[in-house]
Length: 429
Ligand code: ADP
Image (cartoon, rainbow, N blue to C red; front, top):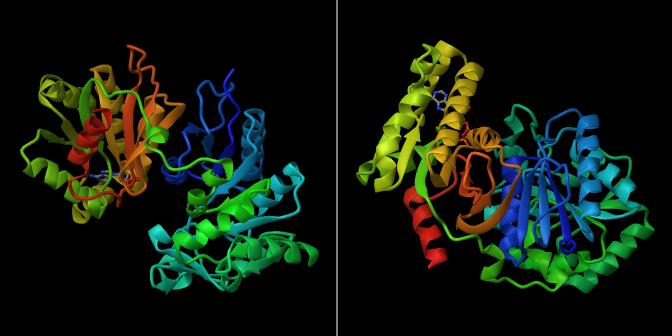
């Protein structure tokens, strides 16, 4: 029997879950991320578990049901506090899902008050007077007003959240946050006395979040982006330490698969090629023509892997991607490429790859699924928001699992791929 976990987290999407896990590790917690709600009990030691759902834009009733299922599992693992994590741009509509999921979690936990703040200053998301800024502009001027699924046209989070919940929404504003935890506690009591059930919290810096942290120690539920995570481990007596990020020693062969066409990934692929390392481009049209591109790629990689990391990529410049999408359709092109790259990732692990870099958010989801990964231990950060992880997979037949990192499109410096392997080696030294 493992010791009970301290913090139980429910994230409304996969990469958001990793982002939260990464912040908790940096603040001193040993963290496991699960893909969906596990069937059985947690079988490793951890201070926090982040359950990754895909509930951001699904129908409200499904998002509520999945979140409650996750809550039940986390409570069974002993979680003393629950953290509902959403995007730092508060992606939601008047129908939800942030408000209804928060309501359901509050009801299930029997609590009458929680906070809500997407503030993540390290990522330039700040909240002031209840208004959310992305970089230097208000949320509704940041491009998020045109989001295809969750257009954010009102930057005032008190109004946005009030439209989603039957509870009264209030504000803990900057003047209070600046005074520190005691003042925040007094404000929380005053808001509760006024019948407020959820309060948006202002925060423009990490110092604000660290002032907020102690005032949240007694709340059964915290709802936030990943920023607040930097301040919670201290409430459980934990301090930043490198042991929180400790992973098993790296072993095996090294490879990168990339299905991301984002600007940063295009540069990273170019850089890898320019430094003389072996790289193979995947042509979506050949997949569409029925060629076994997966088998070709694995045959190409087989002999090269012993010499060092290889890269297999479908990454292309916007014009080339548009041309492919024009011929195959956006969805079909995306699915075909994801499926092929995920199959290649599985094949590489079967060939002995135990250090795998995956570039692309959707591509990562497909690879994790193909590798049948159910949970990952979160290790050290390679670049902001992108940690190394360690996971068991039936494809790694020796049973020792593999190191894997999942990089969403625009994350990482130009030398990310090379740096990732070097960092794993250094961490083990
Ligand atoms: P990012 O994190 O950069 O957005 P994703 O993996 O989330 O990357 O999304 C990239 C999408 O583009 C995937 O669906 C992938 O299959 C698709 N794709 C990758 N390469 C190509 C290509 N050359 N042409 C068309 N679509 C592609």
